[in-house]
Image (cartoon, rainbow, N blue to C red; front, side, top):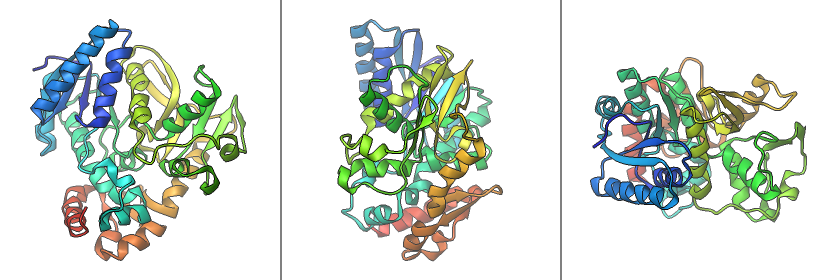
Length: 359
C-alpha cells in the first residue's frame, strides 16, 4: 500500500509504464511514486521493475502501489485522498491506442476517416472522473491528462474541473526536431502544433501534405519544415517511447524540482499544443516573439473546426466538418454533439455504437 506520495501515475498500460520506468532511471531528487490501477499483478510487476531500475542506476525514486476503482469520481477520490499527491498523471483510457493504426473493424475505419476526435468521449471518461475526484478531495496538486489532451482538456476545462496540461503530441515533434538538429538547450526551438500535425510524419516524405506545425528557431520561423526534415519518420503505431518520456521533465517541474522551458498540449484546456514555461510549479505559455495568445489559440482551433470537436464557451461540444459528415452516417443523434454535463450519458451511447461497429 502507499502513504503520502509526490506523484500518482494512474493507469498501468504501456503509456503509464513508460513514465514510471523513465522516472526510475532519471530522478535526481527524491520522488515517491504511487502506481494506481485495478490489476494487482500488473501493479506489483511495475513496482518491482521500477524499484529495480532505480537501484540499478542509483536513483532516489521509490515506487508503491495504490489500488484504484475507476467506476466513479467518488471511488477514485478515495485513492487520491489516501496518498495526497503533488502531481496526478492520468494515463488510463477506455479506448485502446491501437485504434490509430487499425482499420480491421468498421469502428477503426470510422476513426481513420473522421479523425481521432471520434474517440474523444472514450478518452475523456476516466480523465473527467479523475479530475472531478481531485476536486472532491480538495487536492491542490497539478493534474496532467495523457489521453488525447489536445481535445479532451477542453472538455475538462468546460466542466470546470482542474486541468494543468497534457503530454506528448506537440512535444513529440519538438523533441524530434531538436534531437535531429543536436539542440540540447531548451527554449531555442519553439513549436506550435495540433495533434493532427503528427499524421503526415507517419507517411513517407513524398506523401506528406496539409498544414504543417509551425516551428521557430531563436524566434525566427522556418518555412521549409517538410523538406528540411524529410528524412524523419514516425512509427505508424503510437510513439509512446517519445510521448511517454515527454511527461517526465514536466512532472519534475510541476513537483518543483526545477523550472522548465518545453512544450505541452492543451495547457489549461486550450486546444492543440504550445511552447510552455514552468516556473515555481506554475505553467504559462512561452510563445515566440510576434505570436499573440489569441492567434496561437485560433491557429490550433482551426484544425478541429475543419474536422473534429470544438467546445463552445457554454460547454456545448460541436462535431465539425469532415468528422461530423462521417459520423452522421452512423448516428445523426451522436453527430449533433452534446453538452459536457452529459458526458456519462453520451459515453453509454458511444459504447453501443462502437460495439455495433465491432470496435
